[in-house]
Amino acid sequence: MSNFFLSLVACFLVVSFGFAQEKEDKKQESDSVKVALNEKGFTAIDTLKIKKKGINPLAPSKAAFYSAVFPGLGQIYNKRYWKVPIVYAAIGTGVYAYKYNDDLYDRFRTAFKRRQAGFTDDEFYDLGTPNPPGSPPDFSDTALENAQDRYQRDRDLWLLVTIGMYVLNIVDANVDAHLKQFNVDDDLSLDFKPFLDTDALTANPVYGMALTIKF
Image (cartoon, rainbow, N blue to C red; front, side, top):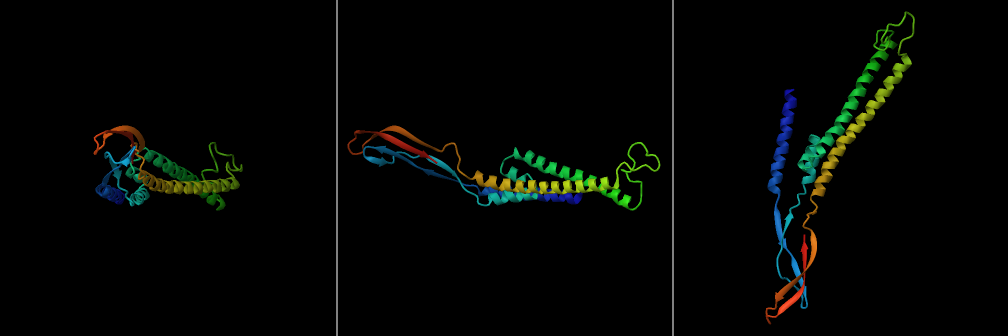
């Protein structure tokens, strides 16, 4: 129990350190672009500050690593908190189904082995009301063998499903971290606006259209 607790503490320390390092690495840059179209051609008339988020190439790897260490941590790292219950539900269902089928497999296998050894005291020999002497068992040897094979097959299938859900949890964290770094800001736009300016040489008013591009 103490070893398990220490392992959890170590996992959370690793994740906390990664979060702190990630926060320090994040930087923002600013740029400006705005041009105007009038009868004299394109002329820069103003500046518009655009915020750009720096790309962290290690973020997808970190997210995948966190989800590999502990399912759901990669989703927390990506701030996709709503995905964590889905991850736990998917993997938890697989683990429960595997355990359920494994328990039944062990019970039928134990009964079948004792039956083959000549014993008649297994739990499936006499279910409910005791059978009269000389009557056949409630579960025949063939029924025990078939049940054993069935639950073994189901157990192995659910093991593969659980592993698949675990791998999918890692892939989801990695891909989500990649997609988060695309610029999908609401400020992305292309806008045309009329403008009035004054010619620097003649002091005459200049009319035109301003093209504003926001990145």
